[in-house]
Image 1 (cartoon, rainbow, N blue to C red):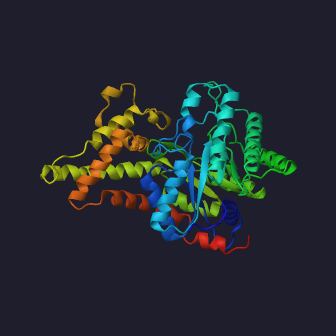
Image 2: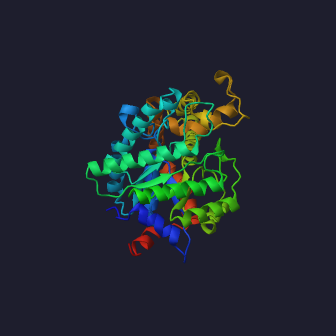
Image 3: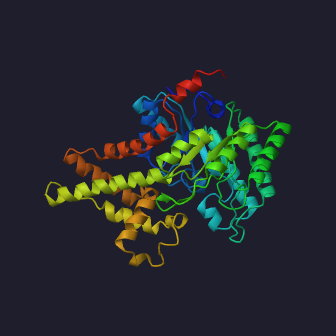
Length: 421
């Protein structure tokens, strides 16, 4: 049975802990394999999970659903609950909306929806989150379809943030939902916005004053820019120790936790630094997708060898399907650097194709052609006594275990439960 520990209590424990330091981990739900891997290691190591689903990953079907096993909020919740029941999960996990808000789906931004329509869609999406038991909502109204508008004015961000929090609280009360909903505000943009320390503190102060005056919940997280920046399959940012320490101290002064985004591909040395710097939580998403894609490619190498030996008669076509769908997904646009030339997709060399596949493979796992070939790969390997799915799951658990160790999360749920409410 899932342990009843509120996300607010978990965050407050981490913020105020003095004897030991801990950092929480938010993880992108990249696939069903990753859900299983994360739930297994959470049960084994006794720490709470935060599933941070973007609107592109999980959303209402009226807005197109999500690329993660074609899930809306209900299917996402039900899938997790089914795995929990299957493995006898007895820890704590939280359903979290990552980057909710207007224009946060690629299509809405590409269609240049007017603000009123984009805000209405954002509200409807949040409503589905709330009705399906989400614990944390990231209120991020910092996107704008106008390519000339690189940074949304901070007053506009504040006003949209308040409007969305008020709406979510109205929905919660209207539907008689007694469970507290926690909020996260801010964004990880690397220029303008909340990157100035003065603006960062001023924003928190304005939020605190408004929520207290209008009897609204104070957000438990504020996102701060620590210098991380994910491009391709590495972190090309410059992690700023001094800035991170200052941001965490400012956030703590107002009783909120510093949330770091873009924590993918950081070295263990930088992960360990999160504890003394007081970073309350960090998000990781595409890195786990890359781990799973690379694991599948390793299994394909095994399949190839045994096909050569004649022990696999009909090898899968997964490598070709994965590569093709990754390239033509166009998802690489968000993660590429200028050094990669994608001007002619038909003429890419093998090295670039592999790079794009490792980068974007996870976006395609639920595509019919890719899913069919993944199943065929597993079947072929099972015939020669190799459990391919378990190999992938264990690879994902190995990557998660690194974060559990560096963030001192083992045993954390029990520690939180043993504190006074």
